[in-house]
Length: 408
Ligand code: PLP
Image 1: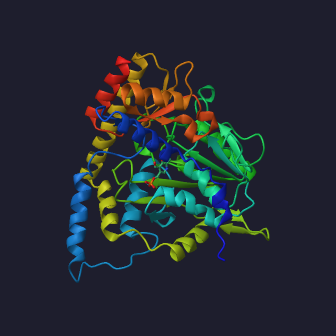
Image 2: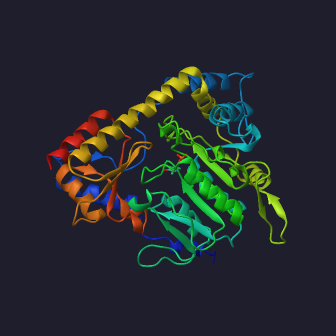
Image 3: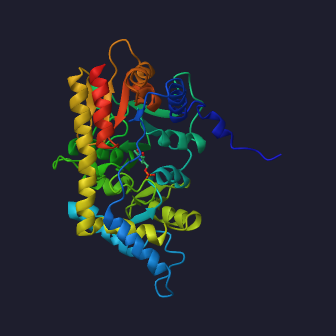
């Protein structure tokens, strides 16, 4: 009989979002008169920027002509998109990243999971707690962890607690690790790292021959000009870090799908025989074999983000969500809640009131205000005692949700 990948059986059964959906469904069925506002999931709500839509329409028309038709594109993405990204996102900020080092993909979720294909099974892995669950689950699926304990932590992973006490920036590990997942601006806490904090991580990685997997999916939400958007703004990062970026949150591409991964030339890992091997070559090989590129139409849409109109429209979109985040912060603070994040990120991380754990506060918000958040405990044991609210929603929904919470 065919065998299954037993590692999948280690995954915790009660995944966060299905459980939220179950509770919301049960509430809505019992109270059909109470309209529920969902500030739980991290999907965007506002329409695609006009510049992106226009570019995609033109690309569709071109595809209908013999001269403008495009079949399989380069697995790494079209050069014009990679060049625009290198110039606008990296070189303009002083980062030495070339077009050749940028790999276009259909999502950061896939890239941050697929990267394990080119990394050995023996790596000691560190994740923050709480964490974007994909980093943990993809390691479980790849057989890189032990079983989970009662608290939902997997054997073999090093968990770095991020708490109010450390400003939600992970402390350096006490035991050596080889692979470190960092995400700034952070999902779920909304925290951001300073240049000095990232420098400490880069110095650690260089000193321990470790690799940082840096998830910058939310970099566009940084408003403080002093804060770094890319790990490559940090001295030495080219020798120890891979960066993931996405058009999902800045340009509303969650349903359109386009993202990128930067693998610097000269960044190496070690083979079993002790040789230094360039990761760029392995990722290039991996993508060429297992991926056939993002659609031409979508890449033209992503390219339009870098046109003057696209830049202006994306800035407006991000600004709109950040205004939502400011409203959520202000109103919840006025309601007497302790709030974190939401200043350089579209997530607000709320301390639950005394006596309520994450699910208790989730149920309270749902039952009394008909507002759906995300229980912090779903992102890891150290997320217990918090709920995440997302700024991705219409202004009317945010205003109404805050009015209801204030009235509680
Ligand atoms: N990285 C983080 C930290 C996220 O929160 C998300 C989506 O919520 C992603 C990556 C996924 O991005 P994409 O839509 O490009 O797959």
